Length: 327
Image (cartoon, rainbow, N blue to C red):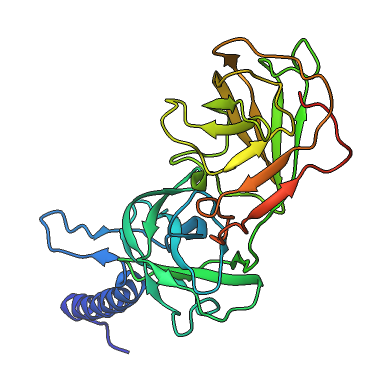
């Protein structure tokens, strides 16, 4: 057997090295091609973007286009889709698209584009929102699912787990109204006394007062003396506009005040199905009612609506239970 010359050995080793390098380049391009930027440089380095994860949906909601409360719509109603999206790549390659599948609410809308921006609804912030959409009509009441799909600039894509939205087609209505004496003297309207307006379901707070989120807010309560029964109304803090809680609340007697009294620094808050109003300081003398009566609540014809955007059913509701003195 002959002995290989050194030059021949060197050529063979060079061929093997070239083959290995070529195979490695093919594997490397296949593995990193979707998210790498490969450029020639003096140090023979490869610059990569190791983004293996699709943008994550942190939260999402469907909400009517007006009002505060999310997660409810009505048939034929206008709504937005909201999403809070975070790209978790290290470093992130950037979010390329966010779309919503709301075909359960609006036929054919399986990839509705969401637009980046700064949005808020229901006390939460979101960085993507759709244009206004219209729910199908008819659309049966019940719970419906929707999903959010995301993709980034590295080609990663994902679809969220389903979120839910409730379709509610029933008009809310007044259920009851009651007062409670929390002041010093029974049957006398004083600071700390409350009036509770109860509805068949929660009322969207922004249908009562612009910008209101349902937490305690300052209002003015007015009680006007009237021959058919003293009349209570709820007004904004500046006492310039009557709020659509009641056209009037007739207190059922004429001896709570002898002239119009404004209770400044009153408060109003939403509590479940109710709106609770606490009286502030009266602008003048008030009286102690000498007997019992029955309140009647006249519901305004416009203004209040529920979480889905259904307008309140108008009418008159008498307080439940027997006649009594108020406050």
